[in-house]
Length: 327
Image (cartoon, rainbow, N blue to C red; front, side, top):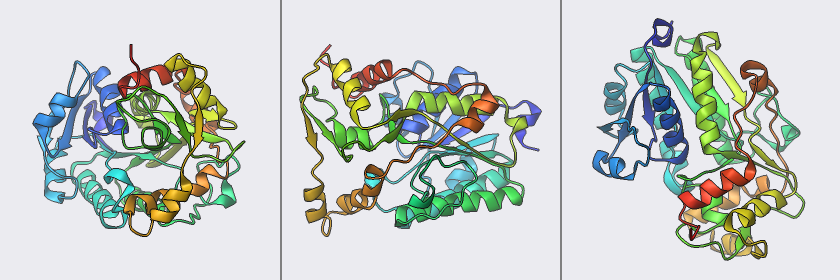
């Protein structure tokens, strides 16, 4: 039995400064949860926080197990939304951080929430994979994500439950460390051009971060109905051929003639031996060449619907939050 079943609604969020962690924290706060956020610099985090109601900031580091365990002492949920910035150092940092979260959740009796990704799927299951399909990743990053879920599954067997919500590539008003803001547009500048990484005609799955936060919050509202290791897929915003997200950007920017340029994969390839970030980007290029579309049938069956903001509203809020709109 977790603390949720006794009526306590307290959450520790790791990664509240990031896009997905911040949106999950905001969704929980809006539902009356008591939210604590572990951050390296509480004063800076408080200045950056845009919502009216803020978490209780606690100084600490997700790589420091003692800090995580201490911050989680009263938590009924630990949201593990922390990742190394810029896709770098996954091999050194990601697994120790999830191990610290598992240790903290085990000590305090909390459920772990992990915002999942599509990296852990190999091309063998790209055609609408269900939550239960085997994970046969072909990349180092995918293998790490699969191992994270494997460790959560083992922890659930040992008595520490978890919830994994897998999503497509993130976009949203407070998200800077993702493909959208690092590839398609330039934060802080009006949109004069769009750089698109995908091959022509190839579909791509996106997830609007406020929708992800709302989905997690609704699932936790029914935590007593979840299994010890529960996984859901979000449909999110499916772009069947790469043109839908381009149209949404143009609509939000009020300019139907914004030119689209090919993402400079040639430069990424050329510089990847000496630029760590480029090596990481190159590793996941396959996701822009082969369409992967997760189905949300299980999620809709459980919640009745998937929280979904229409394309144009989501994009307008995203570009405004990234400082890309002039009005």
